[in-house]
Amino acid sequence: MRWSVTKLVAAAALGWEIVLCACAAGPEVPAPPASGSRNVILVTIDTLRVDHLSTYGYPRPTSPALDRLAARGVRFAAAFSAASCTAASHASLLTGLPASLHTIGPFNGTFPLAPGAETLAEVLAAAGWKTAAVVSNPVLARSLGLDQGFAVYDDELPEQELNRPSAEQKAGTAIAKAEAILGTLARPYFLWLHLQDPHGPYAPPPGWERFDSAEGAAATAELPVGEDQSGYGAIPLYQRLGEERRTAAYVDRYDDEIAYAMAELGRFLDHLDGAGRLADTLVVVTADHGEALGEDGFYFAHGHSVGPDQVRVPLVLAGPELAAGQVVTVPVSTAAVFNTVLAALGLPPRADDRAPSLLPLLAAGGEAPPVFVESPNQVGVAVAGAFFRRDRVPADDERFWSAPNPTTGGFWRPLGRQLMPLMPVATPPQPADLEPLLDGFERRARRAEQAMRTVRRQRDLSYQDRAALRALGYTG
Ligand SMILES: [Zn+2]
Image (cartoon, rainbow, N blue to C red; front, top):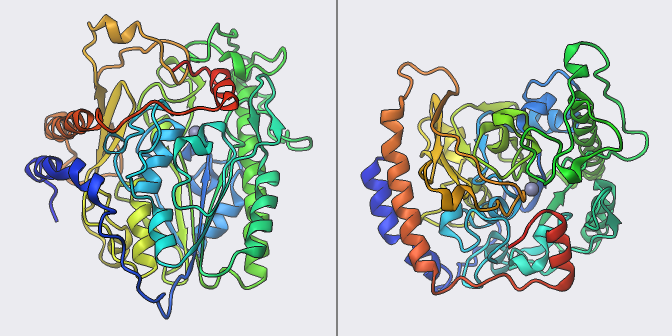
């Protein structure tokens, strides 16, 4: 199927109305499929850039658990998150929609998900699945609205971040909660487990400082500590690790955090596997966004653009219906998890603006629809062969560029246009081919923005939420 600009624009004309009305008729309630997956475990790992995973070719052994999962399932080599910040990206994952078409938008929690939105958990709960979530980032507190459809939504964060009065929890704590919940959860179930560890500050638990870039010139490059959280040419305030200023040491600790989270995830999955509980379970592992490690001049930060450093994420699926060891190279969006899970469970997909199921790509290969990614200041599109991004705001619009970035506390910076190759194709797409796709997407986004003015409201934050988000540099 070809996804032309005409089709995208035509879909846009219907998009928001479909979103608002999608749950009116209520999902059908078929019997669970006789074979294939009955249970679903969705794991999202915060701030996990794909090229720091051994599963995706990183030379350090950071992700042996994901290596094992990919060996018995499917690895998507060019997966993109829908946005480069936590709230927007998770909302797309759980609704299947581009960020502009849900009420959270490309922002990091300024607005909640509208009660009328239809989430994956709501669809599954209505079809008879037991639902539970454990989240580890204060941005995902239930006031964001992503708790819709979860009978259990554990957003209690018993631990303290290194530099800020901000709550969090380590992977070990989150997984202990998940194990306790699974012990009481009737089948079939849908469990969403969110792990926070690679998100800064990069402070792995005791015993997990394992990587060491002591050799080479790169190990001696240093950065100052910045005055805000933006990370532009400096270490974000909340990321500082004592007197350490060497950039390579920060990357070491980032890799340590990944290795720790992956080790905990591996222990969790191995335990379930040993108990025979993965035989009828679809496991999905992905991330909400990556992390800049110097790209565009930004260090140890995300949410300031849609650069590949921030939107290229892992996506691995394993389940009884999936042949082992497959690799899909065409670009896909993590927003497709919504319909992919429904398809795997034998439930009817939502044929609206949501990203279609990825399962047909496995059966027949072929073309996938364009993948769009967003931040408030940038928009990008990935197609076979290339990823193209551009600013959403003219470079001379000082009203935007002088406004603080609510995600980082720093200021937006114009980054212009950039075309980046993905996998080799016979005729690599050029900017002239991709600009019209972004134009159509932006028209749809603007129409949605207009429609949402009547349904969007400011997030109803608790005192604790406000303190936590202020500590993250969020000022909205
Ligand atoms: Zn995040």
